Length: 140
Figure (tube, rainbow, N blue to C red):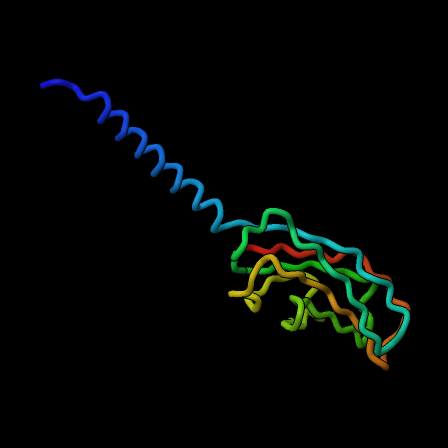
């Protein structure tokens, strides 16, 4: 029996291609990015303040969100303070009483869409309120 070098070379090539497809397809289906923004100083009551979080680099087209974690902070804990985490244009989650946490409320939405923090102090609250850092981690 004679060894067939051409057949052996094709089998090795096919094995390398199959391995590469397995490795690189997994890299595009899972991942995350972190983004942060300086939250505004709130000077007026009953006025919506918005801070946009930049979309992270390397989000593949069609990536779907599995989880969003957040962390935000302002000076003190002002009465009447409302904080929402929103994905533009319309889905928002009230995170007023949780300065850090995570949610699955954005599951199924595209990861390459803009997020923002929306803040407001109601008529019964006190201003000014100094904003600190707001950050998110988006996992797809």
